[in-house]
Amino acid sequence: MIVIAMNELLKTLLILLCFSFVNSVEAALGGSLIKIIKETKVYLKPTSKSKVIADVDPDTLLVFKKLSPKGYWLLLEDEDGNSGWVRARYTDYLEIDISREEQKKKKKKKKSSSQKPKRSTKFMLGVAGRLSFKDQIGARAAGLSFGIFIPYGGGNVYGYEFGVFLHRQNTSWRNISVPLRVKHLSLFGAKYLRGPDIGLLWMINRPKTHLPSIGLGYNLGLMAGKSLVILLRGGLEVLHGTRASLETRLSWIF
Image (tube, rainbow, N blue to C red; front, side):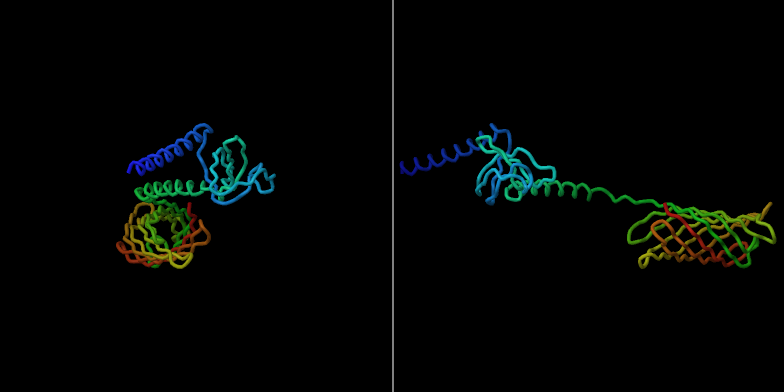
């Protein structure tokens, strides 16, 4: 029994001595210990075209001194102070580094999942033409339009559109209409848009008459590139007369 106890004590002391030796080497040389996991060569510079200065066997412990800029090579040093470059994939450095990176990715993923996704507001500025039927202030009109749209997923956007049209009546362009609408547009296919709108149309028959109307419409569009949209709208306005209208727009997204 005494002999068995002495053997166990000696084993424990031997393990403690090994740990203390590793720690003392690491502290003395000022770096982390890296283990070679595959027989490899030691190079003078971090490139395989460089001069080979030594061979190193698996399970050899060397002190980490420096990482190459691209992270493919390690500058390692032995207990005699001899140093050289070894490919990182032949050491356990990559395993240590990957575990650290995985922890960082988990922290970033946890942080990003707790944040709400940001909505990117888009603005639309364009020129427009209008042709209406039974319009009191002129059947043909031209003007400008401005919109604010907010994407909310799945290729859908909702927003507000404001415009100013000059109407031609008889021979003069003197009457004005101001549409204010709420639109919902959906992307279908690779570059096509469609969706309804509802809003007000304020008509001004100068110099005195103001004629507000309520309107409904449906839009079909084509995305011509990333920042250009062509829209065709068919609408119906009621209140102070009933009229059908057809509008076309060429708009820039920014």
